[in-house]
Length: 215
Image 1 (cartoon, rainbow, N blue to C red):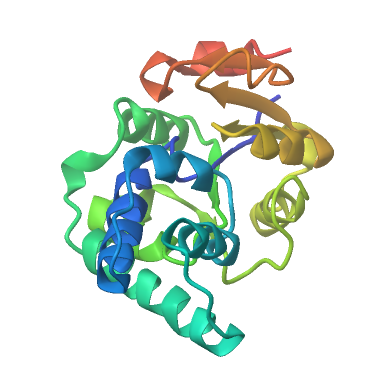
Image 2 (image 1 turned 45 degrees about the vertical axis):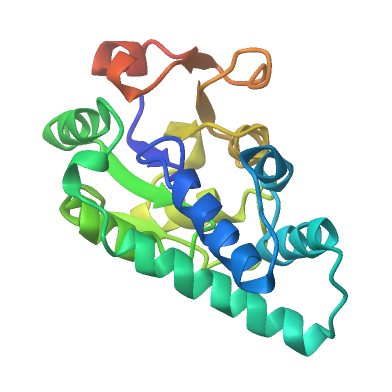
């Protein structure tokens, strides 16, 4: 019996990757070099500070730890300035509809994201009222594949992990869901999300019948 659905944010509910890219690109330009989409591929699934190290390596720049902290903060300010201009129609296809279907069926919903800007994004997308609980980067200390973010979500919802389904687009996220003792629906590439119980292209392919049939 599925009692709760927990959702990753980026790649599941919305695509914020483009905003991270243009924020890094803007920072690189300020530092005097270009940052391409090919360069950006190296940053996928990488933390902010590790991403900054890659960016500086591309630019051939060596700086102090204190300066790195300043630049990381600067990049985040660029990113926030972009996401605060997001529109409600940027929600990925089917996401709003599936969240509403869950709510109507009495299934609890939670967001489980490493992003510290999750609330800002949900507000811009007009989705805050569709989540019972939001566990983001301000509530967690361990990154996926550690299950902390999903376990905290289940605890806040007061639902046993065995009765939860996680929706994830990253391999580390799938592993986090399984480590939490939850079922997992992978969104994206089957060759990457091999451990997920079900794999779909997006939430537009999801409905309550598929949810309750997950084995």
